[in-house]
Length: 323
Length: 256
Ligand SMILES: Nc1ncnc2c1ncn2[C@@H]1O[C@H](COP(=O)(O)OP(=O)(O)O)[C@@H](O)[C@H]1O
Ligand SMILES: [Mg+2]
Image 1: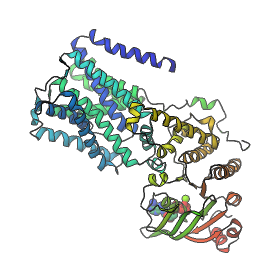
Image 2 (image 1 turned 90 degrees about the vertical axis):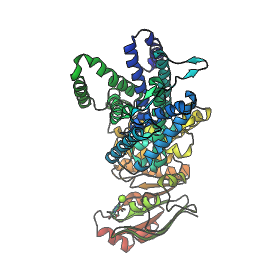
Image 3 (image 1 turned 90 degrees about the horizontal axis):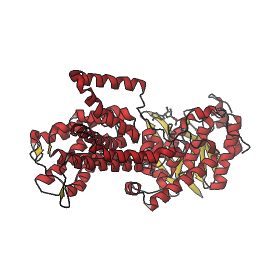
Image 4 (image 1 turned 120 degrees about the vertical axis):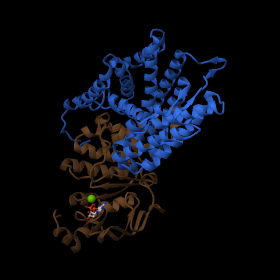
């Protein structure tokens, strides 16, 4: 299995680069949306999957990225690329702001606070003048690379594809570092993690901030791709759909949440034929899925040996003294 | 020279005084014990020393540094490691990943190091793995390295918790009833293990234990508490023949 991992991943990436030349513009748009979701789910995966903190307001960070880029490009005429670090900074701050009051809370209260935070951001966007109130911001300029102006559907597909690859690599690398492991220790047993010298407050805030930065990355690109943004895109439903993709795919699993992202976007599209019924069918299939495979489609294995291996030796065998 | 000094420690839960005016010291390089009947306040003492409970009053010093009002993670970084009375492993993670947690406070790579896979990051990762494997070897659970902690036999889970604590490279190791639930052979192995921790790693050990046989075999210094108060201290012979101690134990469940 492991031997084929690298070549097959490489092949997949090549396919993703060729795909836009084979798809019609409708499916290219769907696939672009899938990639936005891949970025968003990777970011949320850090918070929910790795660190085990429930977040029902993740779309807020998507909004922070989108609005930061939109405002800087329209009102202040910044270059798209320069808006990115500012968007990251604002998102990280927003992550710490939402993180701080949640530090002492356990899951159910956490859900309510994060949900509230998501709504606050949306309501702010709907009411502030600088965010264009309910109608949002339009006429966001196209980004340029040198003298080339990115304008076509394919351009944005490639842009978000690259960002998706970057975020997957980033989340993978974080997951295999002392930081990522510390997040997982907190998820597994907070007190034990603290006893092992892990400052849970610092690491939880870092988790929120890192997840937020990735979410804002997707938001910034969303702004220039759509060239118009409105509060509606950052609703509670959006947060729920992102979370759904993460849970459906498998909490903490990188390939899992990529599949989850694809399913959450593509399934409703495939069901377009049945019109009014599609969200009902979609919902029912999710429920069935969670009943029969609660750990997600592609759960993490944490590098553990399969339990069957245990049967191959005497499970009661204890460590002998003679050693 | 004493490594740990506990002075007039008091802990109150509402009306209940769990620990009262407790003072004792732990000598560098010793194996010491706290014993006492169930509910005497032993675990509470550990929880105060490691920063999980805030003492109502009193002082705790490790190597001359005050530990009161510090976070558990900070105290661990200062050189104290502990195990829990009821195992607190990371159940779904491998033995290796469990033990790697101990090295967190001894390493310093940031998010940037991880993202860029810098040379120092890769070297640190190698060091973390090396230390973790060494600790796993030391407690003798090498063959379980890749198994999820929850799938280990009970005894091995106890040793794993010790390995994880050792990976923090502590000066002082606190063991809360390490022999609980172990069979006779496993207890003998544990005794050797604790001795080796002190002799080979020069780590001072302070343990809470119920098993008097075990205490007699390895403990050099014993502090006995009952209802949160110290009722005796000294060498095993001194303490186990002390009338107050015999009374405290005879009055309760498991007799010596
Ligand atoms: N978090 C807590 N809240 C309230 N009471 C506690 C708490 N922890 C311990 N106690 C009480 O303190 C006393 C001592 O408990 P403990 O330290 O666990 O005893 P031991 O470890 O010696 O068996 C007990 O009466 C226990 O009920
Ligand atoms: Mg206890």
